[in-house]
Length: 628
Picture 1 (spheres, rainbow, N blue to C red):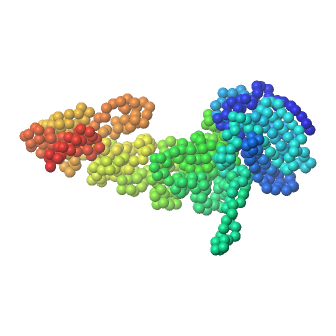
Picture 2: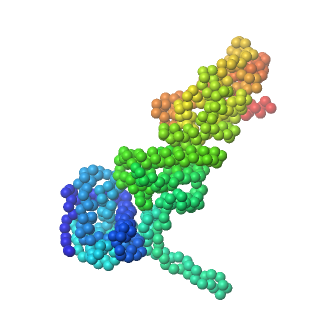
């Protein structure tokens, strides 16, 4: 058979479109062609297992080679091969069956993944880098003749007798002048390592040197020699293709080290395996997060039939689990289309929900089986769990039973347990249970101690996400309100309508207020004299809980909160009318002495909050020295 012909395209030439729109992602050609070769190899293996091929299978492998002088890259397989008729059918017809639709839909595409594979164009990605593509193939069918197909990137092709003597297919790319970067050992090795570490078919790229034992020297010590061996790209069976019952803990850890050579061992992992209503396998690891520098995404690798596709897994993996590590493999994810299509795809939504469910089940199981071990890991996994509770309603429903609140004495409670613990002592006059919390226990220590003197508990909320988490659980829990421990004096934070006796008369209170207002002389600081326990501090400076939250949201770009962000910081200054310092101020006839005592007490309150800076701090230090 010798034939020349035209690939039937009912619209403009498709090859310039492929070259134009895919140039920035041109390494994908190797992913597509090696994947095709691996598929052909798996097919002949399958036919042999079904008794439909009785010949010798031989060394089932895919070889990639290049010739820098001839400017060619060759992808060879020992798969099912093709007859001339099959080449015409699969390469000329099927690959272009969607050409008209393709051109109409994707002429404005910017991303290679919007195009490759969607219309059977995997093979034709070769024309991104080749000026001419040749196929030499010999079918597995008995009596088949070798066939050769050649095309120069136009719609013209030529097909005739080939010279292949062994079953399989060689795809020979004659690399164009713009793509000679691929005629490079290091470059090709890098691409093959990226996409094919876990290919199910043995993949060989040339040779590499290996040191092997070669007898002993005159002292009886072993000596070695260098030998050339096949440079095999891929590992043996990857872990996610093996049944969990066949795997030990060390297998999971070893695979993690392969993926992330410099990371600490993971805390635990989840083995994903589902075949209905979609196919999905994989292993997701919960990593140890040591610093904020670890909060980088793109740690989950997405594969399709063991071929790497991308580490951009947004939409497939729930947002709150993007900090996990590991591998997901699914032939059902529409990998080769635009991201907007990805979001709308029903399988993607199902997979996203499935992963959320599996993670929740695993965490619940760990919590029930070994609560102590779970609590030890909480500082590492709390971030994931809280983020999930905030962002995913279904996850919240499950996580409310294993999401933990940690108090400043390092005890952990579920949401229900904590409410039971504090509701008797921390319910205010309106029937609301008040949870007190600190985001900086060192800085807010005086306020924490003040709360603890009353027998109140204080929660630790000091992770990057706790500001949102506080608001979230406040909305979810009935008759519960959260207040930062430094948002007011303790008796006002949990107002039980218990009036403490005021030792000052109204006239004395007004006098004290006037002395402090003059000494402070800051319009944004609102002074009040309140009855507190004599052993509380003489002056307490606080910012209202609502105002602080609004300003924090404005700082994070919260929509509609910018108004609060532009307002100056305002503080409440509570003077403890029952403190002996206040009596001392009233007893002094010297206005200057009164003012100095008031200013000193106020500055101490600022200092405890980290609010005393600059010239005010210097003046305070100088005044303190003079008082010694």
